[in-house]
Amino acid sequence: MNQKKYYVRGMHCKSCEILIEKELSELNHVKSVKASAVKDTVDIEFSDGYVSVASLNSMFKKEGYTFSEKPFEDSTMFEDYLIAASIILLLAGIFIFIKFVFGNSVGVTADSPWYAFFVFGLIAGSSSCAALVGGLVLSMSKQWNELHGIQDSFFEKLKPHLMFNIGRLISYAVLGFLLGLIGVELKFSLTFTSVLIIGVSLLMILLALQMIGVGAFKKFQLTLPRFMSRYIADEQNFQGKYMPFLLGALTFFLPCGFTLTVQSIALISGNPVKAAIMLFFFALGTLPILLAIGMMSVKFNQNKKLSKMFSLIAGVVVLFFAFYNINSQLKILGIGKIVNSSSSSSSSSNASDLPEVVDGKQVIKMDATSYSYSPDYFKIKKGIPVRWEITNKGAQGCTNSLIAPDLFDGNVILSLNKTTAKEFTPEKTGTFWFSCSMGMVTGTIDVI
Image (cartoon, rainbow, N blue to C red; front, side, top):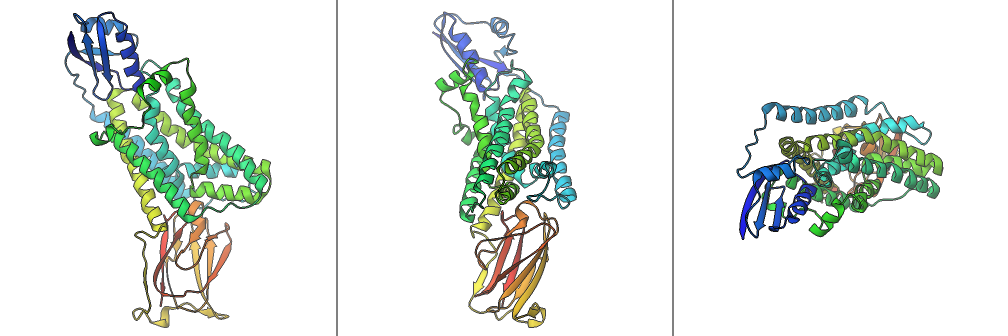
């Protein structure tokens, strides 16, 4: 028996491996075949003789695979890297532009028209929700692309991303209807929310390290058993391709600040049809950015060298999203937060910068926007009731929900263009933090 290794150009997906193994296994003098898209190789064991490179190239000419007995030398042009990096920077620029230029001018209430929720979704799609859902799309795109071979059309490869977004649209409309039907506000505990986000982020880190190509993580890829992969790759069996639809539908439960805002409004509306319309158009607004991320990943994965380059860049982006999410949620859970509680506070006891006391209450005032709290530092006195007046000057998403776990329970929901008051009595001295419900925008309060 003879064993021979061939190098293959154009094989960069799971279905490519399966197709090559299936075709070569049908040859009479072939005992076994092992294809690897990661190594770009095919190991063939023959009972006698061997198959020439010319014969292999002729056999797989239609699929676009090229065989060689020597490794191919792929040279990625600097311009290719520049184009990929430019697209990533363009998306970052869109995020910054929409978030900071238009973020304060768009608000939604239970009485807002459908197009207001669509615009709100556009902001969410290129803002903090992108860190969760957009990062998830990026991290899953590599595995979704492996459902198809190089011979498949761009539209065929885009199908998982289309199904993901269709799943989002349908689930947001259906579950929005149910929220309106319930007509009462659902309460998510801060701990549950934070643990869920950290869990999703850890999965994103694992997938990102695979995309970057870290060798130690390749063996832990989230893939199906080989016999199941063969079944999914069969065009007659569409069953395995429903997973993107299900994943898209389940993103309704990811606790993004923007999503929670619209879900709360849907509950308050007490109108099932109106609630369904709100959430449907919100999800529709997030679709352009999420679909653009999917289209970009598919387009790059059609080219071997661009595929590697895109996986590297996208992997770095996913890592950024994941660590950003984890860092924010650790603050919510009390790990790494700014807090220095003590029984006494001899420092900073100067009463000259303490707030005015009105009707026996210390009054502090703050403005909230989509990206900041101003001022973000206060000094108050222990044992005296506090009236915290917060004016919402465009705060959307997570910043319109404020928490201070060490000072009071629950969260403060801010109404657009209105002043909301929160009253509490500080019982211990120290430095305590407050933040938006996602832990992304923070401030501190000194209690003396």
